[in-house]
Length: 128
Image 1 (cartoon, rainbow, N blue to C red):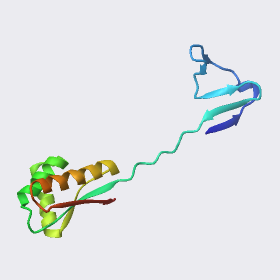
Image 2: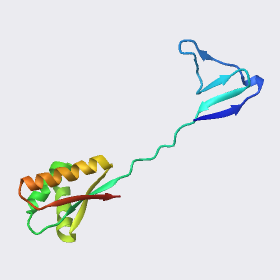
Image 3: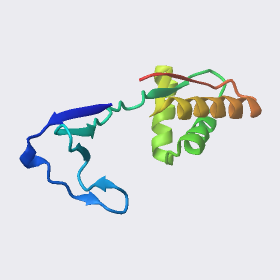
Image 4: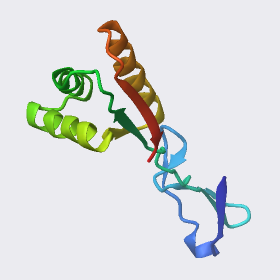
């Protein structure tokens, strides 16, 4: 995508880089018709964020939940304990916000790790 700008004869002074055949400016000049072509900068969007949510159950020990939060979300003991208590009292808590691939991976890791240790702890993700 290019942006065209019309210039008069006086603005056609050029300073080309001899090695690359490009101008030192961010636009290339067309000497024949007085047009300058400048690449348009694309408008980038931030990737969508997804919340990773830990759900409460009546069987998983609190210590195991703290261990999961420390291991997979790199939370310190105090932060992990606070989130564990929110899961226990409110039924769920957000462990973090990530892009889709990272959130999906964390959900799989937590759920697999819980099953390997024979706990029913569930982790899900939802759009932030």
